Image (cartoon, rainbow, N blue to C red; front, side, top):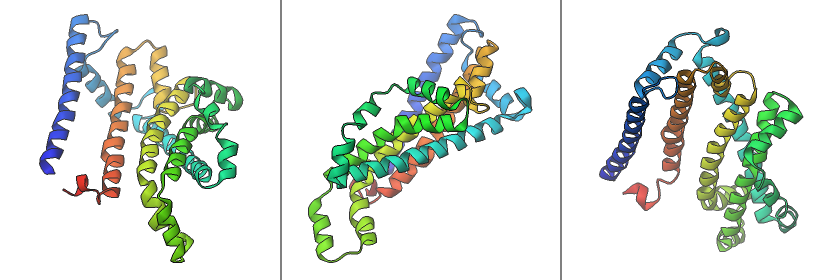
Length: 261
């Protein structure tokens, strides 16, 4: 198990190093920092941004904190709504018949158009980003949970009911274990979509945040700062994805053979 983990980590690190090397070679070949700054220069810019105040007197940590807060709120709201809708559809025929025709309509809405609509309806506000994320992410989560509910082993549910298991125990011991793979699948997708949409909404005009800084430096024609904020954002999301979400998932599925060996 440990050797497999080392191999996986080694492959991931190697792929990142290859990508950075390609970037470094491309920057040397272009030899124009106004078009493509190299990784060393971007690293220095990120370090400088983290220790000094930026535009309007706010630090990088201020913008990072606001973006992470928006991601957390919108992600949680979309997950709760999506899980509730999906399970209701999977367990209640009336809701399945009613919503099954509406979900595909929501799935076809392009992300960028939903952000535009949210801005037009709610202006450059926190509500707009919340609506945009929920409108795009919730249907995907709902479909995932609906499939999970339909795939549950009904014999286990019937057996638990025959033994007069209470509703709380039924949910904890029968429903949740069977739904965990679908929950984590929806979890990963919802997280990935939430941070992209929040960044997009901030870029279009929501005050403060990492996306706001993208656009600020874009207007200043500073490719160095634009890339620095983009790379910083990607690094933060990778840390959350592989350092937090992946660990939670690994613990949740520790009982599986591939995790216990």
